[in-house]
Image (cartoon, rainbow, N blue to C red; front, side):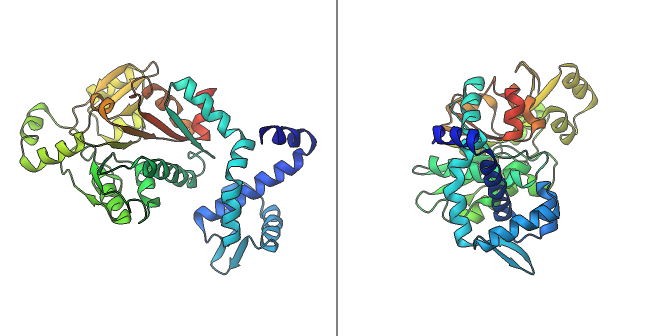
Length: 340
C-alpha cells in the first residue's frame, strides 16, 4: 500500500487531499453526531460555504443523514470510515510517527490518534477510544484495573460499553485518593462510571491524595482502606494520565515552599505525585495514598494516556521513569512536538 500511496502523492496529490478532507468531515461527525453545519465548520476550521459543498457530496453518496437536529453518519458511512482508517493513517504518516516515537522514547508500543487535543476537544474522545481498545485486548482472567483521575481518564470512561468485559470479570479501583478537583474527574467517580458502563464492579478510596506523615500512618491502618490499597497493588492493568507540573501543583493547592521547589527544579511533568524536570529527574515528591511509581514495574499492562502539544515536555520527562510495560496513547499534537 505504501508504494501505491507514494505514486498517488506524486501523480494525483489533489485526490489524496480531497480524500483526507472528506474523511475528516465524516470522522468528526461520527464523534459528535448529531451536529449542525456551523458547529462543524468552526470545529474543522472550514468556511460554511466549503463545508456545504462537501456535505452535499457526502449526502449524495448516502454517507450522511441530515435532519433538523443535525448531521449524522449512515451505516454505509460508518463502514467506509472503518475501511479507510488504516489507509488514512498511512497517508497522514501516523504509522511512521508511531515507529519513530517508540524508538525515541524506548517504548513497548505507541498509539497516536489524529488531531491535537489542545485545539480540538473531540480528540480527547479519540484518546479514550484508543485506550479502551488496547485495554480490552489486555483483559485476561480476573482483572483489576487501577485508574487515576483527570479529564483524560474521564474521556476513557465515557467511551466504554457493555461488551467491554463480557467474557472476563473486571474490578475497577482508584489508583489514588482525590486531589480536590471536580468530583466528576476524581478517580473514585471515574471508576464508578467505568463499572456502570461495562457491567463490572468497583471499589472506592475515600481519602485525600496528599497527606502529612502522621495522617498517612493513621489512615493506612484503617481496615477498609487497607483492603482497597491491597487490591490496587494487585492490579494487572493501570491507566494513568501525565500532567503539566505547574498545573498539577496548583490543583493540589501546593504550599508556597513546595511550589518554589517545583519551579526552582524546572519541573515540567507530573505523575503519581512525582514532579519531573526535562531530564526526567524527580525534583519533588508528594506523599500520596495509593499507587506509587515504584509499584508500576510489577504491573503487566500500563497505559499512559496524554495528548496535546502542551503536554509534549511532560510526556517526554515522565518517559525516563516509565516501566517497561508502558504503552503510550497520545495524539498528533504531542507526537509532532516530541519528535521535533
